[in-house]
Image 1 (cartoon, rainbow over the protein chains, first blue to last red):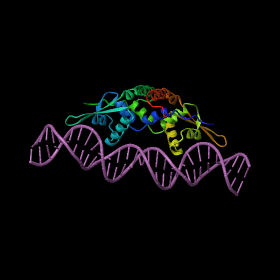
Image 2 (image 1 turned 45 degrees about the vertical axis):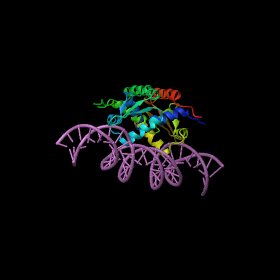
Image 3 (image 1 turned 120 degrees about the vertical axis):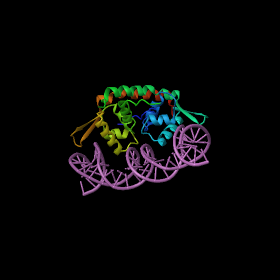
Image 4 (image 1 turned 90 degrees about the horizontal axis):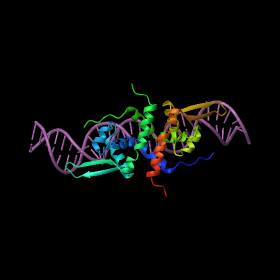
Length: 106
Length: 106
DNA sequence: TAATATCAGTTACATAAAGTAACTAAGTGA
DNA sequence: TCACTTAGTTACTTTATGTAACTGATATTA
């Protein structure tokens, strides 16, 4: 009756992706580099506080890059690293599943 | 500067999958029908309370099936529906990404 | 000149979600 | 009778998230 433990890297990936907002932020960044306010507007119900937290976490994971342009006012661009862009196929499969199995809203 | 709204079905799929524990429960059930206590043990840090909640939600979404065998003591089996099994390719892509991009723990 | 706006956040506070441990009911076995 | 099983539930605590106001440097508007 012993269970085999789950692969820790797989578990880590699920942990990253299943944190609230993370997936939507990454998906949003798949369309190209964006500024804080742009991401905030694209994900209408996220709070600036959590967006800020998630971007830091994703940067720390090496999924998101943060580049500061010392203009006036300062411009900060968030974008995906190679590691981040490599998540695209996961979203492709989610899109397939959702179009096949979820009902079209009325 | 207007954003295109995200596909509501895709958004719903992400919402389902990114709720804490949901993905791991579904992944666990991909290995076959299981009882409450089995799932509970396979996912060592989940509480019975949350497992119970998630199974109800997944049943409600049509992803999980709950079958009661009126034995003594009662046996209840949780399994994936077709809709639930169709999530497998998503996990396949997560597994690929994690083995390619996440470090092997020491 | 003063008020207002922008950007990229932060802070304090309130609510919602998740974790912990004890408990339930129906029945079995010692 | 006491202890044990299964599939949960309950009360309570801790953590996560949401809300709204605020920061500071600069620019624009009245």
